[in-house]
Amino acid sequence: MIRAVPHVAAMAPYALADLGRAGTVSLAQNESAFPPSPAALAVGRAVLDQMPLYPDPEWPDLRAAVAEVHGLDPAKVLCGAGSMELITCLIRAFAGPGDRVLGTDYSYAFAASAAAQVQAEYVKAQERDLTVSVDDILDAVTPETRIVFVCNPGNPTGTLIPNCELLRLRAGLPADVLLAVDQAYAEFADAENNPGEIFALAERGDTVVLRTLSKAFGLAGARAGWGFFPPDIAGEVRKLLNPNNISIPSQAMAATAMRDQAHMRNVVAKTAAIRDRFADGCRALGLDVPRCHTNFVLIRFASAEQARAADAALRVEKLLMRGMGGYGLQDCLRATICTRDVMDRALAVLKGVLG
Ligand SMILES: Cc1ncc(COP(=O)(O)O)c(C=O)c1O
Image 1 (cartoon, rainbow, N blue to C red):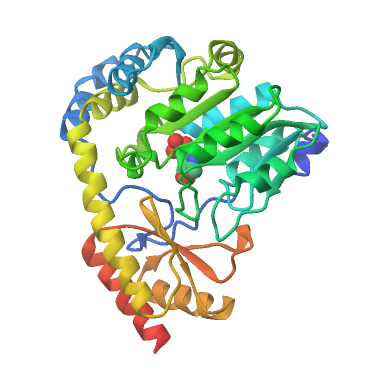
Image 2: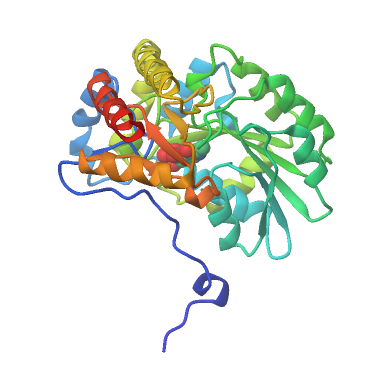
């Protein structure tokens, strides 16, 4: 019998969302409700004739676009096949057997899977009110901690901590602990949390910032993420990335979408308006919805049974939200924000369930 190495054989496959059947509307994967920049789609189509070639392993135009928009040194930008690839390679490079990766109660579950791949232990610091707690993270650091992984804004909570809290976290961490700040949803919060303050942290040499084109830019299918890395850390992560990781059309689309900030801001504003209306509608039904800074909301029901009943009723209407049992939040569903029509339909179903 052919056997996988024991730690891989012992791993559960990463749990993706239930994608439902044809005709189902997915509110489960935090994809954008709106299409990407038309200019990005046009440029993607225009480079299809380059498909016999391998993609550029240095992502020059995407790096340049990121650097222009955020005022960063392009040499410190690395691009991944989604930020998932960057998360995996970062953890593979800086943690190993016996080490600890410290996340928080509700930080992105994929980091735990990436830690399991390298036999590192993934531990969680407590969150308070579904929000990252810097004091609890600092209390949970041990000599084995190699990486602290924080999502801001959080997924699945949608909550945000101010940059000054992340600065306090960095200041309180030992110098040999790498801080990874996952900002997959940052474009929904940049207006109130100046991104420059967090990129400046990466200049210290012990912090990385991860972002993606999958959410606000509507390019989840392109698999393009990026991060701002201190050079020494970038050098190690670079060794582990697939050398031709982002396809030619994806690099072209991502660079153009990044430069089309007006389109992205418009998508963010439209999404946020639908989100806030839906969240208010849920609250009016007596449901608890934390203030969210993302393209989804976390809905807390009175009980796990009520959450299950809501999920079942939504499925009858072909609306698929994401159950949160994997995070220990059995009384919650996470709803990706879709168009206003769809969210109104979802609200009507919830109203029916709650009587
Ligand atoms: C917090 C967070 N980080 C990272 C990712 C990965 O995004 P991608 O690999 O599409 O860039 C996601 C996707 O849902 C996410 O929610």
